[in-house]
Length: 226
Image (cartoon, rainbow, N blue to C red; front, side, top):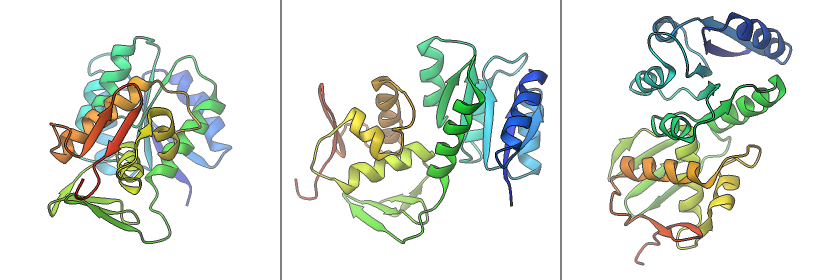
């Protein structure tokens, strides 16, 4: 069954280009020209990922991202002509899994999309971890805190798994991205900080008891009894 993605973008030429290129690589692309129709399309059809433009008339991509995340954890790759870091950070804070600035090459988009899809797929081997009240079912991609299920984005989940696997050991920011499967994309340290901040909020770790910051280096997940 081919991979299905939804492109929410008012640029028809972008759709024609990506539909042809991604189609040649086994990915079927559906198109919604605005946010409202994009949300409606997601209600009626399951998609493997969403390509979401930020700058659209009416409801912009940031609002669409927020509404998607309120209902589903489908991977979101945001597209924008803006180079402003603020927009990029806001998109990530709202739950986007990756961010690609226009203009971009279809080849780069395909690489980013495949990376996002890989992170969203369950692992073949069952793997369960538990530390400090946080329980992780890696195969089922399920996280519970003190028995209560917590919804995480794909990257948030991978960051948590990487940290818990090495509980008690400091992981530098760049190494943490690699552990989370992000070595194929160029992202700044601010991206890591944004996702860690969001992860802490979802884990109820506002004070940094579980995920500790090591200034100038990276992060460490508190070791049991430490």
